Image (cartoon, rainbow, N blue to C red; front, side, top):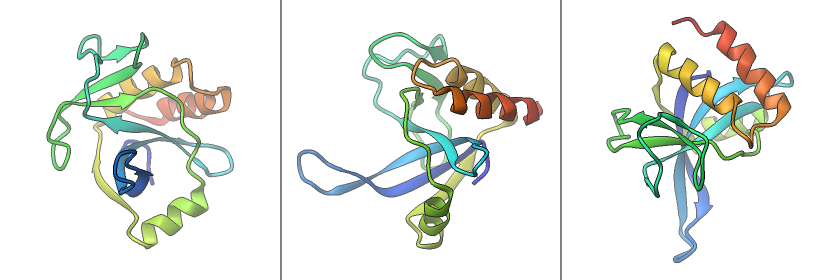
Length: 142
């Protein structure tokens, strides 16, 4: 899993109404020193998320507007800036081999740098995540 890749993780959460397992798209941002993966979830539900500015740190939902990424993401899409646990690298490898986690697309370098800067500055980003994200920014060429 490389920074900038968008993956679909099937069976990510249980639907609160039906109990059915549902999937989510996630964006790989960086790798921690131990190999775990810093990511953020994607959403197509606006819920008051603005399209401008693209990087929005306000309430109720801090987010980064990606536009319509294309492929299976055929609606306006935002990166949810709220924090998430890092993806254990061994689990990610296993989930990929079992078809639970599948790559769908990759952001261009310019958009990835903008997202990285936005996520690094988000309130819910830990210091360790921020360091890994800023290191990745330095490696991402536009």
